[in-house]
Length: 338
Image 1 (cartoon, rainbow, N blue to C red):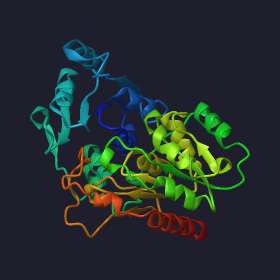
Image 2 (cartoon, rainbow, N blue to C red):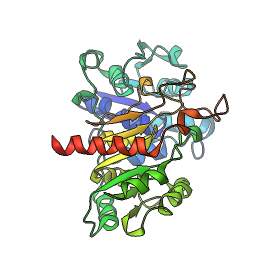
Image 3 (tube, rainbow, N blue to C red):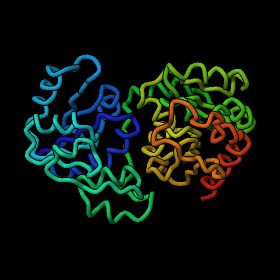
Image 4 (cartoon, rainbow, N blue to C red):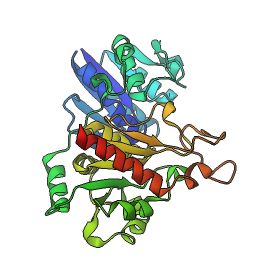
């Protein structure tokens, strides 16, 4: 049996698809259609038989690119539509998959041969797993269930790159991930948080080239010898490896929390316009979330609005560095006393 998984969403969605990939790999080969950045995450994953990169914004733009990718996807019996657009559904149809399975709520549901209920009350990793094994997903009884635990596999090169960054470090370090694709999900307290935590731990900064400004705010307030600035210096799997070696991670509601879930690093996630009840909270044991629970306007968006609809952004502005630092210390204390 050969399966085709279509997942062309955000980085975090790709990570949360890995429990489904692992389940499908028990029954046969698994091909995955994903974005160029998604392919970098899955290139070393043992559940993936073949990666098909769909660069829909560049090389594979337009009908010719669509048909080229569809041809590469042929040979699978069943397609699992993790990304619910009409284009993804049409892609599986053009790849001649006899069975095409997706969610009842997806835009492309009219292209599916079978529809699975989208459970709003489930974590998204569990929802995605239900596309391939509804009974197994239904049996999950807590967020630490092995069935929905994401997995990633940094390469030797990724580990060596991190070795160079953390060489001769005597103190444990906390990772801070100040970035997010959504501006309104970026908490502004990371510099103050780094200053507080540097009294006890070294500080590793995780992020891409677009996060250099936020990283500079942190490095301006923390002694250079306490900083491991990995911003823009590591691949995604390299960042995953750095997070794995961290004693804890502080992050926005963004992809680093999912990288941490895949390697078991306890996480404190700062939620502003979104809430963990949407199904995208951290999964590593001991993880916590921070949010302003006194606001009637939360949540205001599924992903994060371009700007605060009410203009005050209290959901983020009223979360203090002291509050987050105390929660991180609690997470670390509980982990080290287990």
